[in-house]
Image (cartoon, rainbow, N blue to C red; front, top):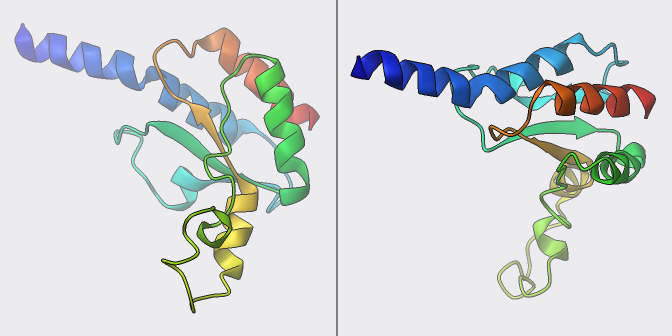
Length: 133
């Protein structure tokens, strides 16, 4: 019984993440416009992610973030800037850089929640916002 209950709990816990992965995989986006990082990095759907990371076009990221946030869907941009742009790190990074790849990544990252309260309705709304933008 214990093993079956643990497995059922784990499956339930992973449900939103698996549903997000499926929804994102079904989107028909031009190459490079939206990159599913777990899929590209070959992360197993059995590995628990705290948030579902995507890379989107830098020009669209903030608009997409605002639209998702306006709908109450809990997006995050994770990093306000690349490390050299974060106040207080100047002395740590003195003499290093530039960091063009880190800056490009920070400008494109968008994450979606994977917690248990992310249900079918929320994922449907995410799909609509991602398609519209």
